[in-house]
Length: 458
Image (tube, rainbow, N blue to C red; front, side, top):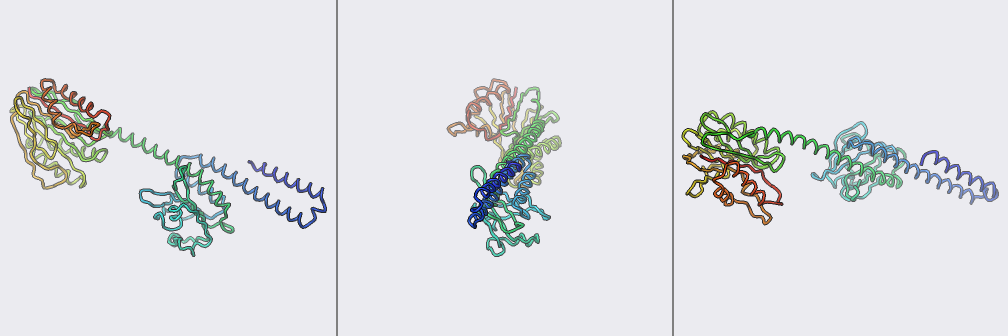
């Protein structure tokens, strides 16, 4: 309702009173009539105050829906509250659920700083804990009042209205605190107004928070796409073409980016073969993986000793990674001339050697993971390769893939696939393994990255 409408209502009521006085002049002059007129004037005043409040709430709705910027929105909200209640200043606390604290995002007045207090402490904390409305006229004599904030700012609180802000589910998401009404104390009408204003504000605040979360999510998704492309470029773009050998590799991260790693490094008459698994997933694991890849690319051409390369990388990783981040790693050197394979296994799933007429062999050197122990002495082993030998290098994303019965894919199933398909090309074997793992774990969430290398001797 507009102000013109208010004037019309006043005009109609006053006209009715004038008509009453003209029609019943004797009655109008009596004390009873004067009392009645006073009551009518009081009712008109209260009605107009209520209409004014409703108009203010309608205007507030338009203002609060004018922005999705959270800081701007809260500033607008508290300006409305301060102006309408004719107060000196206001503070809006939001609840930090993780820390179980209240914190002020905006404080009006000359002193603007962040205030944090535990839920349950101080008047605002009590409101957040109980959901009660607290309206006090002498805060300094109230044991719940925290004088420390006034002491820090030099401000003197004379009276206070403190109310919970709830979302549409009725959950308390913040606390409104209005300080120092200019004339008199805060009234029940003030409480009524703030209750209605907070309903609109809580919806607007949650919309702003959801909008901010959506923007942040889109930003992170864009960064992850860039990180995924960078990580992809760090790994081999194609399989090496070798005389007398065939080799292929692949990596499938379970998230946008992961901590699994494999690499082929061209050496003089040899090929370095690496596979690793960084603890954890996502960006932290990918950063350690990138560090590992860079170190290996620099160190691999300097030595034909697998244990020396792994020892030096371990020292570097131990200096740069945190205590809860480590790497399982396998590094082997394939010598084309002598058909020798030299390797060091730093706590990684042992690659499996399939040799015709023999039981499978596991390539291990009983060394510890990298990045956890600076003084680990790594050792190496070697063996002569034979025609038709197959070596499969893998991460536990393959062997620990789960089916609906919570059974693992396991090493035995992997070995069976290699035995049954050993006459096929490495490309075919790789696809058969991936297809079988996918079929085995159909309908189950993927919890780990999958990395696979297959080497075959011709």
